[in-house]
Image: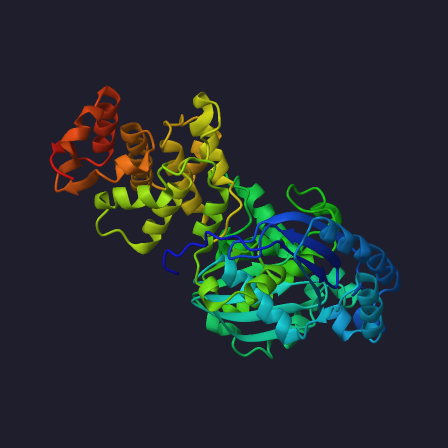
Length: 501
């Protein structure tokens, strides 16, 4: 877990073109920093690697589709003013007999060199993509593409041993993909060569790739999960095996009727489920964790300096989404965080970073209608496009920021999601943070020079606000009511202390 380091200076925009075995994709990012946010994302299913093991060559129709689409991708990115474009090619292009010729033609059309990744490079960048969005990721990463599956050992945020296996569904015998129970021997033989898979026993298996993400969507729908965000969705291994057993024995026709599954993935989903089954049986992780970031984000992360990589992605993402159109005298997230820290002695780092994030986002709903600010803040933070945060932490953060405005009804869909993800103790802590922020704004009007002259702290069963005599006139009815409300949530008696600065 990184310290609370934040990047306040955005980098220029960047784009990554990923030439994969199944699809080619362009993603344009707002800023190539520690928390890149996609602005534009377009994919074309070319199937370059279809039948690769049988023919040894790229699929001819897929080649023509890719060569037609790549100039469009490059033109779009350049017209968007992108500062840098990386073009990466993976398993199909590097393994096919005609891969080099395809890369030569594609490079000419794109007007720049295309980087053909080795299997080791592909695995490493995919692993970095997971690490970039899940600081402290521990166990193993698996990235299933159309032509290969990459496996990378993860040790508390550091990548270790890696392997790339030619087990992508597009390159295998279609009969094995159509009947994945017949592929077990092939899969087990390939996985036997990775003798460190069992190192993730009791740890986490981080999953990357569209086919595996469809399993997450299917499980969410099946369980009625309240938050449809794939990143950091977790399933205990025993439950994952139950889901896999169901999917691996379904026909494509039956899977087409299942909500949450991409119709373009139904042909290969049973095979993807069977591959996951064999890895889970061999590795015995505690749970599977789905990850939205992979190769492309790993490419951007790899270019950062060591100092930039140490920046907290959640906090940097919150900075991007915070309201910056405020006067210079306005309180900042740092001001609020420092001011209320005396209420939370003994707070551990994970809780500190969530409190910091709440302070940064405290004005995210400032421009909404006053009657809907709390609801808007709740739903927006629940769904905020940031990484480095678990689902239960999203719920905590959303409740804290919404409580800065008002208490949202328990009947609200967002509150039902919050209640299903965190317990009463965390809800009280989140509300205390939000009420402390609200108290600060009520007391000072959101003016930093005034807040700087007051201190808020807890002393045993007392909640103390030290206020200079010349500012005592600021204590009015609204201030007293909100101070009392904060004290109630903290189970402390509020008391104003008038004295010197």
